Image (tube, rainbow, N blue to C red; front, side, top):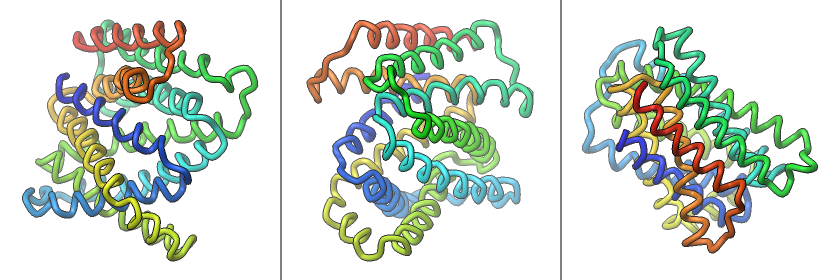
Length: 277
């Protein structure tokens, strides 16, 4: 639980870095590229994942799914605000993950676990009502956000299983991010040419920090999935909304509305309930 909460804090931190960017496409490519470079260095000190066919099949599948994740992320942020898109993506995914984990992997939660999962999901989704766009929501950003929620469910289940089979969650995460980053950069370079390389090089220090935070966030979550059921870990990751609220108030000097305070409280209660999973 502590590992996942630490990962959630890292997740909120790198999202705060991305928020300061100017071009969602180039900034997303920069994060993926610098993350690949950082993990390439880390992999020197990590063992290879176990040479199991199922483990590497999960790895390849995860790379493809993560490329789709980045694509939908760019499309969603081009059409909608972070305060609308992020809660929908992150809030719906844990509930669907819990349902599919119960059906596909036989992980049956307790009533306390189910309560925690849906409290976290409901609390995060409540943030969408606090968005300036909530009174006039356009279908495009909501559609892309919901599609990405499905993608998040997919890579959560695939990576949770792959990390268990690999024998080392950190090695599995590193190889996944390395291969994903290379594929994302090559695809982006084919679409936008040298502009991509210039953008990555101009702000590589900033995105390198974001890459390290991303690796820490997801590798800690996958390690936790090797020790605990997948669904509660996936839900606990969404407590990143609490850390993002703290960063918004004390770092970005943003104002938190009463509705957002209620949402954060619901997420926190859900996180506590998940401990009984």
